[in-house]
Image (cartoon, rainbow, N blue to C red; front, side):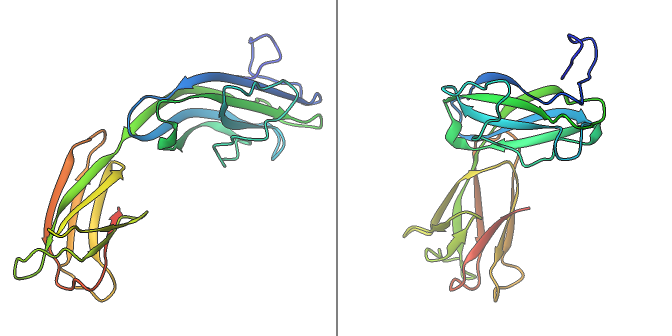
Length: 220
């Protein structure tokens, strides 16, 4: 936490402007998935001016006391004026895989008014949520494979191959529901659950009564 008493108390001088940084280099694991950063925080400060900011920057950048960082912000949360412990969760992209970056917590306050205490953080954790995968087939009501159905998985179009086989990768843990697009039929649905840290391939098979329409995969 921020202290102007050599750590004895969580307090700051509301009449003296400051910008200070706490940082540590993080080596991201070599696992294909989304990284989840969580921590608890509380602060009073001053609305909009006495606050914390969170950054993830290259290790070539060294934060300097008295100066704000101008790149690498990873949270839009307003870290001010909430003096009850609150859990923050920040999702970081899979492009960080097997790389080293600098995680920075920055405290900023001006020199005009404010409330005690300044920022305090606790119980910081960083973990990776490995992706899951879906693979399977789609058949018509006569049980024939349907290769031309378009599957949309929230981010990209996935087309079946000539054998009517589909493969959707990079899915976060959770429950996914296949549903027909507008004009489809109510029974054209299927639900698949990928549990936390499950990297197996989940197989699906279901009938689709209108292959002229795309099939949508939604994360519930």
